[in-house]
Image (tube, rainbow, N blue to C red; front, side, top):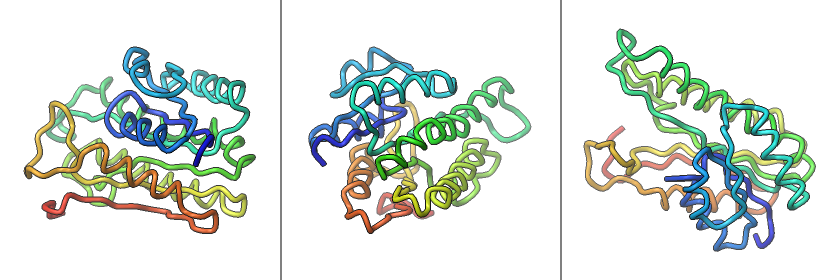
Length: 221
């Protein structure tokens, strides 16, 4: 893995930050993208502050990476935001719009902007989805956006088919998240998901791990 160039979109905290640390330790040249420049500065790699809902900024991220390293071997589209509501009868419309932009358009923009570079390098696209995209959650806009992400991952796989580019969807269950409580104690942590990302990336070129679904042992559904 040494010297492979790995762009992590959504790198500032959680799964993105954990993946950045693990990938850097494994020898990847890591490029970090998120809006929080101060948090990116604490991580190993090239920090490129980026609003992933602004396509021009995502294009600039890709160009900066190519200017610095000349290639992109792997991408983690780890863009996501939650939405607090009790169903479709409430919730702030502007906040809902931002969640859709982040969770759906942010993933699309990352794929679109890196498509040519990944094809050139016969690289690997990894997308962070969720168990919430496999079973609908009552009244959940977040769950609906993750269904869209799951569909986009398969669409991207088909679009890249025959180019040598591999695609992996990572679908975690309950993951420890600051400010959010879960119904069980032993939930996953960000490092668990980071190891799954690196597992997919380190398989031989003929092996395309299309999806990894990970739940805590105690999670029922």
